[in-house]
Image (cartoon, rainbow, N blue to C red; front, side, top):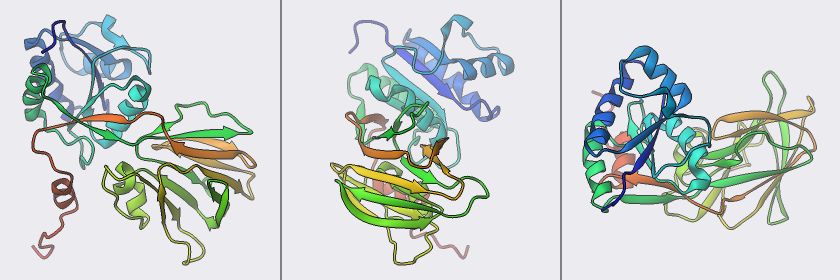
Length: 295
């Protein structure tokens, strides 16, 4: 049991006014424990403009400029990915409260938060270690955070023709993809963009990465699962002489000729899970496996 007050950093979706009412339940639970609360600045401004909440403006933080014991994400999976990018190097457990739609990652209901807080203060909280990947570039630097929990994708620019992506694994040439893009996915991200492009589902505790093409010109180019100890090297040829790199959906342009290297990050992302949570229960529920679609 903690002997000093714990600090919680809150992240949220400022576009969900009705759903953000769950913040009151979260704040009440934390107040009962006399926990210190800080809030990501954009979300704090949203809350102060829509609700009368006991949060001072001096409790705001920006980006990665904060310290805390736990991060709390209020939203959907996208909000949790934003939180993960900010706490990646801090090794800070994330409590994902689902007030979004899908909830593969953020799978704790608002009414379950008091139980999670009790487990945290009792020292019995359970966390899962999720593989993250990092990107390095040669030829043009990246401006954003280089870590992803779900995936890193190389994509064509809007209205551009297909791009050619040359892929090598541990310096061994594998394929040249004529496609709209290529996704490098972690097991956690295998149920996201990877799945929508026909990639396989990988359980979170498997030590793999997956390369999945986006709308490939050749049907013989299929997803490839490799060890997460591999280094993936990618180069792009494009008629527009540039392309996009999307890191958990955060995209920025890069010039043709930039060498992209993707590997397992040197640390995992820690996600708090409720007692009794099972991954395959989530799959069955979210993907409606076994449900009668005729009803």
